[in-house]
Length: 128
Picture 1 (cartoon, rainbow, N blue to C red):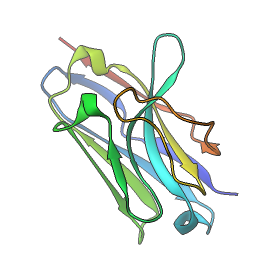
Picture 2 (picture 1 turned 30 degrees about the vertical axis):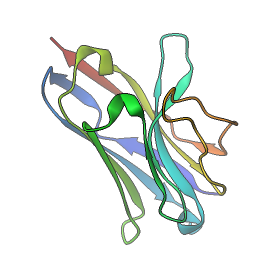
Picture 3 (picture 1 turned 120 degrees about the horizontal axis):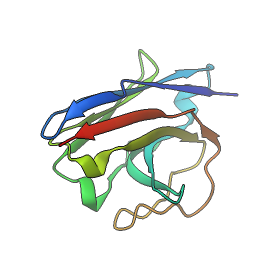
């Protein structure tokens, strides 16, 4: 089964940028849709950005214009570039993988079902 490991979290000042990387192990990488999710104070996980197996990319409405997501099939990674960070972006970010399309709602970030595989998360802290 595929395993996910997030990296790149840390502390940054408001207005700054961070790049989060999800590294995938397990040769089934190319058979999974991949995405990034953020944790809310009540422990929900809401979508930020994802790329399905067919290349379909979804970006949360709340993050459009500030994030870029891309897959590197040669390196088995999914990268999330976040710009113009604010303290409200401070939370833990999780990488997820699923053999089916991610199917989450870009206007709310809510998933339509529990996704198959999750990483341990990486913490982002944005100071004002």
